[in-house]
Image 1 (cartoon, helix red, strand yellow):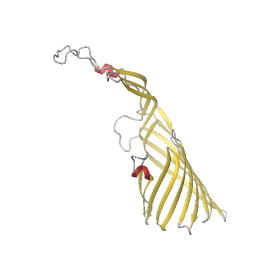
Image 2 (tube, rainbow, N blue to C red):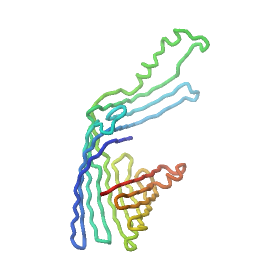
Image 3 (cartoon, one colour):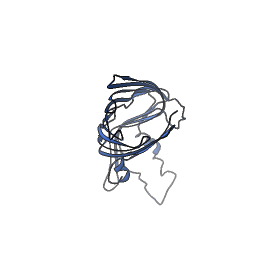
Image 4 (tube, helix red, strand yellow):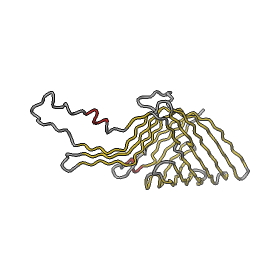
Length: 273
């Protein structure tokens, strides 16, 4: 299954910290309105292709469904669906000793009821080529019995315009943080789950070393998710009104993609005032 979401998100929320002296707790809730620009959802139960040894036959077998909020190009503020989502945070800490955070994000629902398009089919297609009696002599009757348009269309998925809706793929994360070396080094131990097909719980360890109070270098290692092992690095710098982050969560796949599956590079530029 493959899903693609393109949307604008408008968020508002609250956060509250409670001090019990030795221990503290904070919690937060945010709600978002989702303006859908476009969305694609492809589900394939099975698919295969077979070519005979002498090349005279191609056999394709497929069972799939495809939904999209709209066909064609979209504008930035175009509304082809609506949705809502929520984020939830709960944290417990002992000042300068440890912190436990629990976060659940992107718990939501989307509806596509304006211009949806659906394709679905479960068919076997066998193509044996086109027979031309004589390559040296063509006449107006040579292709009279051949109607490629109708032949191809009979094997294509059927098209409808039914409304559809989807639950958003949410994420849940638990992180335990422990500062060391007078807060210059912070160790994070986390477990993350994403509501995606074939995604397993992802466990990781991340070390943040503060070169300066506004500059940090991070190294992480973890396993699970959609792969066996990931090694990541990250660099962050913060100024008075801006912050910058550059990193990768899969260093091996990015540096040697021919020997390791998966790769990622991310860049974040932020402003606060």
